[in-house]
Amino acid sequence: MDRKTRTRKATAIAAACAAGVLLAAGCSSSSGGKKAQTAANNVSAGKATTARIKIAMITHAAPGDTFWDLIRKGAQAAAAKDNINLVYSSDPNAANQANLVQNAIDQKVDGIAITLAKPDAMKAAVAKAEAAGIPVVGFNAGLSAWKSQKLLEYFGQDEDIAGQAFGTKLNSIGAKSALCVVQEQGNVALETRCAGLKKTFKGKVQNLYVNGTDMPSVKSTITAKLRQDSSIDEVVTLGGPFALTAVQSVSDANSKAKVATFDLNQDVVKAIQAGTVQFAVDQQPYLQGYLAVDSLWLYKFNGNFSGGSAQPVLTGPAFVAKDNVATIAKFAANGTR
Image (spheres, rainbow, N blue to C red):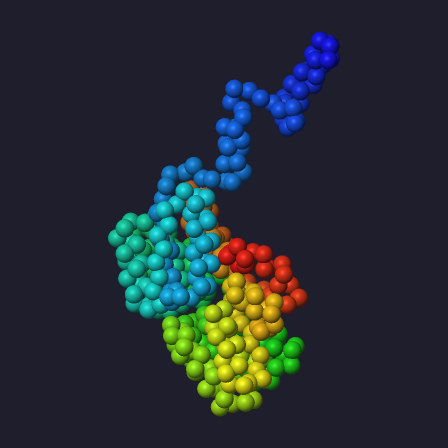
């Protein structure tokens, strides 16, 4: 290559770099190379450089319920991005959950994300947090109560709408008698799902209350009911793990009933693919956890709140069945759906 050609090439590369064009020839400088690439990666990842804050997430999760693993993963992803120290705790007992809120207040956290499965039992604790100047957002449970308890925002599914959609779906597949299995009596979200189902389903609906913290008991209770009532042709569960148990109960009872469920997890995705579960209503728990934590960061550092404190942010319902489960399966394999 002669000197004139080298000069023309150098000029062209310089012009490209000045215009912000990335060429294979490179736009090297003393600040380039691996260090520059690392900085670029950090920018694209959106990692916050704001001061580190502490956020408490307090749920009514029961031990062993994998649904809440997805909530927590979403929350952790947001916390990592936003430079947040996330303190997660849970208790299915409403009084104990209220005590966890008091613990968060005592720790002087910068924000609280909470579920209101039993809103009346949580009302006083939420009011104390707000009186202490701690912003509180709701998610997953408490759609009917979040505004009256003056929460900033709410992220979740309208369970009445989800229940009605479920009932319509059962009509379309010809079901006649549905058993709605409630794993926690008094949980407003679960009760609302069954009530919504009854509004649109043209067949018969029975509620069956089980102890969701004792899966062998859940299995035996469903089995006994199916043996007692052979007219039941659809078992409706309100959580992924219970759907898988219901499949076993159907087999044990020699029942012809089918199983469909609210909520999705990796095992339910596999069951849908295998045909042992007909479909699931997905409320996107990972997204709920992520948005709840991220919203508190946005409020703290930019004064943002979704829905203007007047409308919830809905994350569902969406149906996942055999015809579209492949789209979800790859994300479920990563443990995020």
